Length: 294
Image (cartoon, rainbow, N blue to C red; front, side):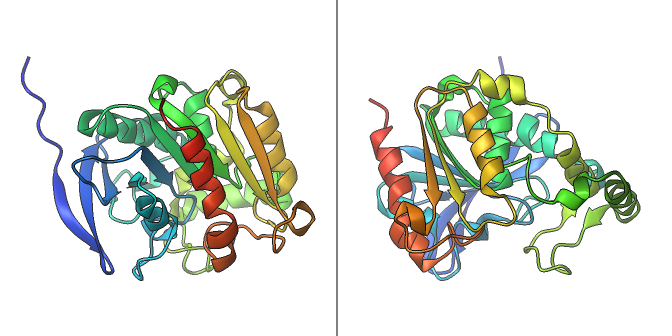
């Protein structure tokens, strides 16, 4: 059997911080960029941070050297940040309009899991915000991520059943379908949704998420956060996802004043804010420490 070609890797910088940038191919032939923070001869537990809709790696790490990614690196974790197809440093190609949310679950996340197995082996923690969390749980439910290679999962604002009520009505839904078909993408910058547009195929997949059976059978330990003032992914939807997830080892955290936090957190604020740095990041790190490989 021929030796596998080495995975391309190059030196990179995120503001003042050094990083490594890997280029990995998915099973369907799409190139993904995966950033690794602070790789060393003796890396700590691997943690994979998966961004949500309209985002890229800057959600986790800023050019000022701030973010959950750097925080976890400084706590000793081996941090990997994939950018799903067509986002950030992951290039688009002529198939862009047809790429779907399921493609991310079926091909992108398994390619990242394969990269870690190739580069270091062992089991990784997966952390996802918003759609990133939904994608992790969907990839587990769909059988595309190998559960035996997952140490634990952490999701924040992971919801697919609540919010955007107008899109669930027949006429607005039909109108949205028509607009996406004609435009081919959602221009996020125009609507101040984030730095990255989303393809027609990706957005249409939100109407047909169908991985509940596998999610109910999942065994991966799960920490789930919901933000009390989240209008994008409301608490009931996040709670429903948490309740359906089959693991016995799971924990629910509602980020609100009544629960002892400093504020009723909003959707992005639960990760990207000074209060989150004080109240949420340590909670995530504590879970990862408590669920480290034995």
